[in-house]
Length: 462
Image (cartoon, rainbow, N blue to C red):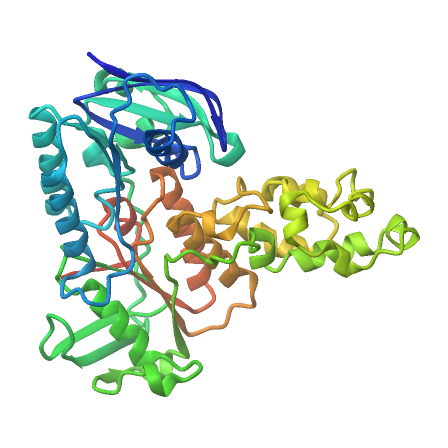
């Protein structure tokens, strides 16, 4: 068997990383979000095929990466799932035997029938002698792969290590964190009996997308999940619900008036939590997006040395100079320390570490605690906002929702919240959803992953 040999590569959280990747096989790369999977396939394999930074043996001359779209192109008449499935079919038909194709979460958002079709397409290409790597969290791909590579054990600086490499039989015996979740016999189901007295919302006369005079009804103060294959109308119903109940700024532009809403007084307003990057501004980092940086600057501006050096709060602002480590003026700024850390050291702290350093500051703790709660304690304060994955960005938004004083009678809407999440992260997400509904709010999601909809209070199959 011929292998791609990666040896002693250092990039992001991969440190002197080595791995063997077989060719002409279906290889599944697995592990927690932020464990280094994307760094391996994007920054190492793909970039090395364009510009040789490392001596990687047997790397095909052409490495192609196919990522799912999370926002449908405006001119498309297909659903998002149909669009992504067509894109995958086209990419597979165009690839040549000497190429290596990497498919990033090819099964995300698809129903069981579609996931089985995608698996069949990938396996058929491999039988013909093609080389395919799938970065995936879905069981269908993992338990049918020829070879598995697991990174971890955690995320961010707690990840980046090779935990396992080998065939499926060996993987099953490995008892790694992913193997434990993949080979569990029964999906754990947590059921919360619905109170018969629960208030409901009913939206009728829906005539959008595939629907003709359709009615959608679901209980409030619950986690409600819409399921169904691509093109069935899940995203349409999320959009209809959002627009029918929207009461925010410029509501007259967004509000859908062609439907009837029963129980409207039971809902104060609706929010959609998208999976788009939270910012593409080059100086936007996690600490500025979450507005915790202002509190950190306040602490540094009150240090005795700051006053002695005649520095002010504005000198500790995030700037290109701090990000790129330039400017002699910074020498004074970097002399100022809190708990033994200067301002640049603070940027390198994980959320978990920052919570310990700033534990005496209630405002900082409040903002950061929720990031930890949604499973993002491994992220670094100085991490660029645009570098977060879709799943991470969505969880950052959830933590922002939690960090504010939660209003009541709101509906929070998520499209495929399981995207990008390791199986171990799903119960964490559901726990956060339950916290939101405990404040008399409702969660409405569209998702086809059994591991998430089996935790929900109410399921609507379309």
